[in-house]
Image (cartoon, rainbow, N blue to C red; front, side):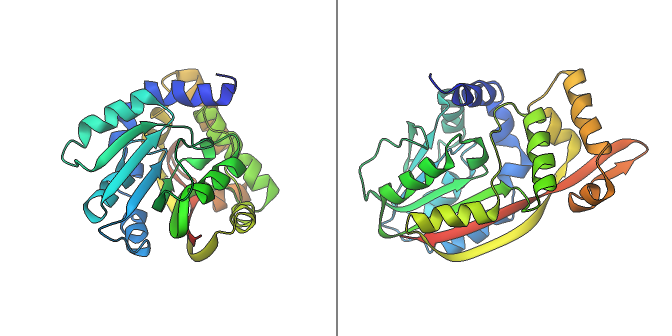
Length: 255
């Protein structure tokens, strides 16, 4: 594979496929029912869930639409997820790159992508592909961790994620996402921003098991200045990090 960053994604998610199925951050987010409601799903909709991971969005969509195509770059992740979703006969699994989708133009009524775009090396290609495969009038829902507009805070956050997960590329700012959506004629009809609290131990051990690497992540958090600690709501108890919070953005747009 030419792009080493995509090879890194495949390596990371192959190794930790089951952890993402069971991750409470991914499986129990309060954003899931909101997203489902705002998509205004119909029984004859054909839906595409890009970078499905543990299949949490596909599982939400399946009872309310005709067909869901759940795609992921990582075959092992997709294979693992399919084993948990055997009750949903209308979910079809396809190994696919979010930046080069193997579908015809104007194929889908609904496209979704949740907590994944920060792994994409070329987010502009991802949005171009979403616009291409969406039918006219189709709806697109994206949820992802986003970087603050402030340069210093954005650098701190992206550095933190990269330490913890080598497959992390970059969390974009809201202003960057809005520009990409506008460029591809995707009109926003709903958006919301929330703080998402992450239990530190669960978060850091989902992708790391080396004590030295885990300590490096901890030091990055505890050595942050006060403004940074306040923004990310870093909570410490007796020198131990309990939790911190990141910004998560939901946006729904229409072609």
